[in-house]
Image 1 (tube, rainbow, N blue to C red):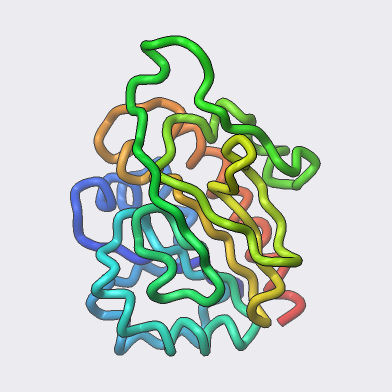
Image 2: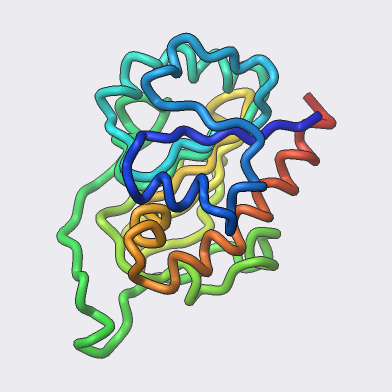
Length: 207
């Protein structure tokens, strides 16, 4: 049995995303973030760290998460979780956020860095475009999925920094879907969660 586990930080937007019927069946296990120290992750294949999870809860779990990755498993780190504090080889730069670009006209500057990646069988550029809070420098050997101009990446896949797989993004779809605004974020989850469930099953066969 393959297992996709999600961290629930206890907010209203996590509750709507995780527990309501639209996405509930994608999650085989739900772990309250403050129960993570006692959680048995041995049967988990993919751990989805929900966006806007308090980094102060994740920092003390750095070794636990490193051990999880060392066993060849997948960690998905969503936006606003303080990635550099609890994951290896993450280089992040904050930038001002333009929340109103879509009213002002023009483009936000995002582009698909690897359009032939299987994720984009499920998602389009429009589905990953709402705003961004900064960008990552992609580690050598890792693969950017979505770039912001020539600055760096807002979404990348890293299979070189650990024996496992890291999906790192600054996108925060759970927050916006759970807050009932920004339709692109719901479309993102509609495509991303099936992709994640499918790849979890595929990778579990090899670990």
